Image 1 (cartoon, rainbow, N blue to C red):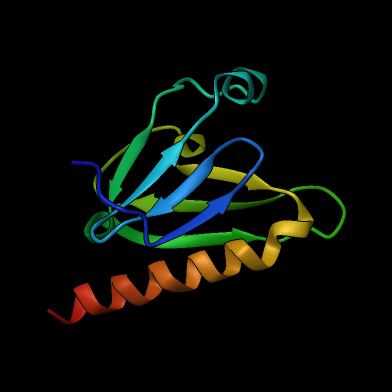
Image 2: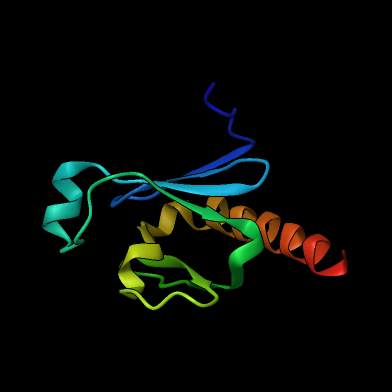
Length: 108
């Protein structure tokens, strides 16, 4: 059974889905190749393994949301989704919700 997404954010090189315990990054083949991503498959990241979330907002070009995962050395692009300025608020809300969940996990 596929878990129901609680929150989603749509970037131009991927879609983020926030579930109960994971974030899923879904990549479309055309954007993965065009932006140089080495993988085109969906990627799940356990919220408990995220050490920080970085949001870069740019007024004219694209912004990005990046997840830093503890203990895993990989291309930083694998955990980054780019978005257009019009979607900035959508990604701010997504980031805030992830950070709330990280804080709850850290209190346990």
